[in-house]
Structure formats: structure tokens, C-alpha cells
Amino acid sequence: MPLDGKPMADLSLTLSPQTPADLAAIEKLDERAFGPGRFARSAYRLREGSEPDYALSFVGRVGTLLVGANRMTPIFCANRPALLLGPLTVDPPFRAGGIGEELVMKSLDAARAAGHGLVLLVGDMSYYGRMGFAPVPPGRLVFAGPVDPERLLYCELVEGAFEGVQGKVRRAPLRK
Image (cartoon, rainbow, N blue to C red; front, side):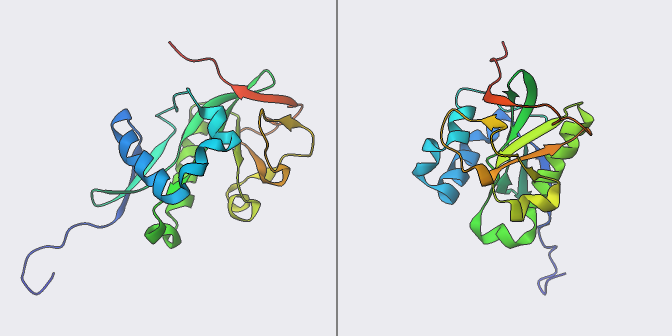
């Protein structure tokens, strides 16, 4: 207890499912972390106009401060349903604390529990490899825009879910 005898605020990390009410704070976090150029990236273009699956997308808070967020968006790889993970955003002062990895693992666990089999992302293998992601073999998947093929990664939530997956990555139809 501090010297003044009053209890300190709880500053531990809490993870909770995203809600539409979080979107404005997440947008500010994304802007600080990635800047305006983020909208031109192929993964952003793929998510454009699609709602995330809020039950699989999480926010991280320290106290009441939103310090991290990730999104899982339904997509298709050719005719197979999949999820697109990203963006994963952690406020720069909090990046060394493992928050990003906790958010990813929470989403992967929730997606697995919900019966999903495959997750894609565009990111660094050195970071995501320890969470179960592997590089997509060259030529297997095609994005509508440019993507560095070395950064296109997949994670099987169900063994064999990536087997035979080949073709164009596209948006899932909008849910009504």
C-alpha cells in the first residue's frame, strides 16, 4: 500500500472481446501506431467494408486505458472460409510487455473454440512463428493488391485445414 494509506489502482492487463463502442479508441490507436499509410495496405483493403467477428477480436486494457487491440475478420481463400487476423496494434509504450502475443493467442483460442480452422495474416514470421504461424508457400494464395509473399502467413487451428487451399483471397459476403 502507498504511504498515504490509499489502495493503488489495479494496473494489470485485462483482455475482453471488442465491441462497436471500442472502435473510435481503436482507430486512434491504429493511427498512432501505423499512420495514414495503413489504408493503402492490401490487408486493410481486404477488410474494408467488413465487420470484424467481435467474439474473436479483443482489446487489452491497463486500468481503463486501451493499450492494444486485434481484429479477426471472416474471409475466403478460394471457396474455403478463413479468418484474417489484423491489425494487431499495441500502443508503443506498452510494446515490450507481451500484450500483442496475449491478444493473438486469445483470438486463436476463441476461433478454435468457435470451430474455425484457418487464420491468415500479413506480418513478420520472426514474431508470429512462435504463435503457430507458418509462411504460405509461394503461389498458393493471391491477394487483390500487392503483398510481400514472405509476410503472408497462415495458422491451422484444425490439423489439415490449409491442405489443398489455393486461389484468390477475398472478402466474405457481408452478414445481414
